[in-house]
Image (cartoon, rainbow over all chains, first blue to last red; front, side):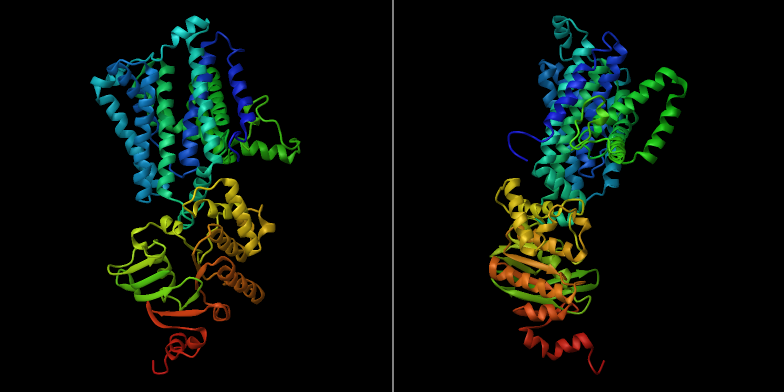
Length: 341
Length: 242
């Protein structure tokens, strides 16, 4: 609403603080850090999806493929140009942004419905997946190659904490930056245009909103975030193969995370990622054989009873029992309480 | 200000608008009437760039060729519209609807605060200021139509196209709306091009009336002239020898 402070920055700092402290209780547990890192990564994917799908009705189902392009591009640029991955990453993010921008531009110009966009992008997902396997000279085919860019081990050695924890904080920094960008975007003129377009495209055009332009911008921003998230996903795995970037491995999870957390909720991606990764971790520990089946059943329950997302459901429950004493201080105990403004 | 020459629009074999010519000047309230299916809304849609008219049609606004512009550019050049079936942004508040009109309907770059101020002023203009914080979908349909009008007013247009804005209103509300439309012209210097089926409303307010039938302009004149025009009576009531 005003120029120097964004609304909700205090809440974001609280949520960020929770994540900064989160690795401490599980210090030394490589597995625990891995779960936390996946929470951040899928919050990042879901945040991009929230912008482009939640606010713009453009269902991108090629987040895996686009993330893969980001990851491979970062590695190839760093390798062929001989620069650090920190310089290659912006190039890769830009490439992904331009691909997503083109998809959004074509879809908006041709007035594709949400179904058509999802079919188009799912096709692109399949094309990219084939290309990752087929372009053996560049990608190493399905055997892939080690992915240990960003010279994080140097920092880790100097500070004396494990590389995985340093990577966790790097990803956290990207997520916080993306959250600031998101909050700014949604509270700006862009957010208002997105809302108008989502509710009624014809009415939005009639009052002077350039629908194609705003949808294209949303696509570009999402593409950039997805490219970065994909690169970080490969870095977290320390080894890049096409199987990291499949539809099932990325798009399905990101979509579930967003719906479970709450679409168009500022903290929907983060809350959703916490819930989904917690369920995943619990099941793989205690019911590994039945993991897929139980996860599927849980998702059905979530979609039946939590369709508006955990955030909205919990807030409604709290309001019903009069627990919220007005204003509320989100971000305290669990991120679940950190509902959107 | 608005010059429309030889405008036609076909849908397959059906000629919805057939070689229509007219002009609207600054400070005028012009009514557009005609039986159902006469092509009134289609004509609005060609002016606002929603539909592309046939070759040879000419539509200019203050000398600018509207046929080369997209819908959103036409809105920014000062031609705003309301819809026959109301299209407010239901999940936004009433004030946000009006502020969106101010924010996007002009080429100048204004802050969100300024947009809200203009939005509030536009709400006061149509008498919706006490509803500012309601969600738009909770307004009565008649109020939603007034909100559409406020949304256009907020962008400070030169010409507004109103599509059956009085339908569904009580006689008292129609009187109030007619006053608002006169104030558009008198206080805001906005010209009005108004489709209406409710004859009392339009006959008492318009300076000039254009009558369409089956896509053709069959009459144009003051309300008095239109009332006494044989072709118009025939169009509405049917010819004796049919």
